[in-house]
Image (cartoon, rainbow, N blue to C red; front, side):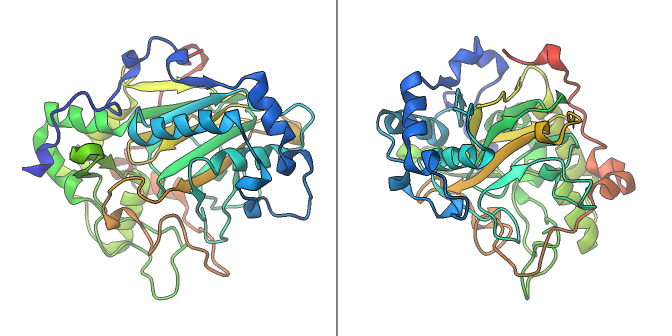
Length: 372
């Protein structure tokens, strides 16, 4: 059956922690020449405060040698291990807007930016906004996040300021999780291939249901490079539980067992990579192959030192063959909806249904477990 999945362990997106001897195996360290190119870019050097960063195009940057390095990184994200970690973006002497413009310029070499919320924002800040927003999207909280994927082809995060404590980034190969479930409990692949209904978090448009009327598969098997079948993943457990509660469709014991095993494999220390994004660091992930998480964090008291990451959702024509059901809306990302915003209360969900949600995320990570 198709759900038995590929047997080819040579898939470069199938990796574990031991696949990398050191962070240098997956890092791309920018050179002084790369940083000079970024700082010389008109869009970074001469930021016009009134100009929207999202209106900037390739010619506003004019990268030379750096463009070739980013093209290699894109191929690694699309066809290789599924992620790239860039170290050494410039930040000294820049404003956060100038830094964000640089991140945007780098992102253009991976794809086009998608809307990330009903406000239509194509470049956002991952911050703790719980003081001003009672029901923020989870990336705008300081909660620990379970390993998951977003509804985009690629996600990019770049660090302007890290937290005082916590905020460790964690990534895991979804292809590896699939392979491990196939090895340990192949009967649990069936409910994961069938998929689940997802809550749209209050960002649905006119005429759209609050919950996806179709099931979104966790795993899908489609043709990849050279016609070789490859596994893709779409998974956000809290969205699944919220969707099924709202739709009145109970999750079965087999479905809960499958998600419990999925989470256990994904968060196991031997399977994940954990690292801090320091100032000037950026990663780009293939959201169909690699899942990401973040530990909870505590900010510095000074507002100007609070944790702030610049976030992009990116897509590229022909990036990957995935089911239409991977989209929660008519298009990838979250289409702009005038007057709408996310209203879902995730803290209440965890309190109301600790069994189905798997309980509060707990990656059991501290500074001693972080790759350096």
